[in-house]
Image 1 (cartoon, rainbow, N blue to C red):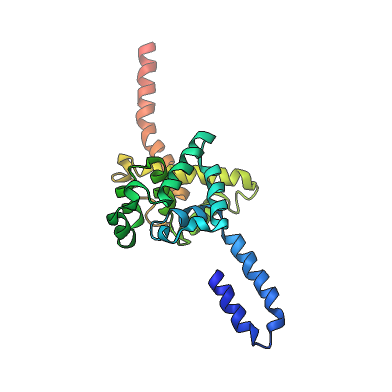
Image 2 (cartoon, helix red, strand yellow):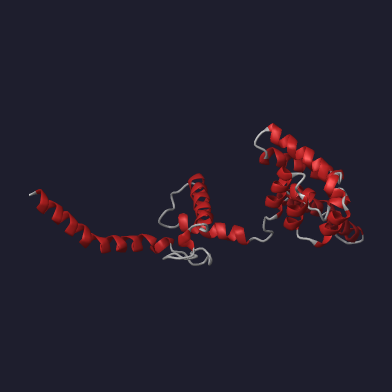
Length: 231
């Protein structure tokens, strides 16, 4: 963003619209502030590819990292551990200063690098793998909106945003947990969430009702038999 603003400034200096540069700059800065969140700063600071460029020299990055630690850490002691381990990482102390770590920071994937060299800072390594494994595409957001369409539709249009957010949160976590169950690989709903455009949510109630109707004759026979024994 800094490079882009600088290039736009150079172009606008000799452009007939040079008087509008400040307005354009305000638009670009506001867009950047909207997209830039503390987790972005934390991901930049924990990226081993950039740590040779000393991201700790950028005041904005440091403030974002501290705000991210405030959200991630459960208490002040855990946040202190994060800060101490981050200082060790940025100062290239211990294993972080070895030649192998410097070479692999350029050639190795981020998660593999932290899995290999994060033994001396286990808490920071765990946070790094979670932050740096976040997808950079919008597919996850699109899937969430698809989930919203299943929960809040024309028939259920009186749900407020808080209730809808909670239902989407529960659904998304149940979907993730279901992947570790046996029925996810075998059964009626095998790999049900592979294709986000296909869902069994709409017909699940119908199928459940069909299963209940299939069990009713046997239940009725059992009930009649119990009545005969009673009499």
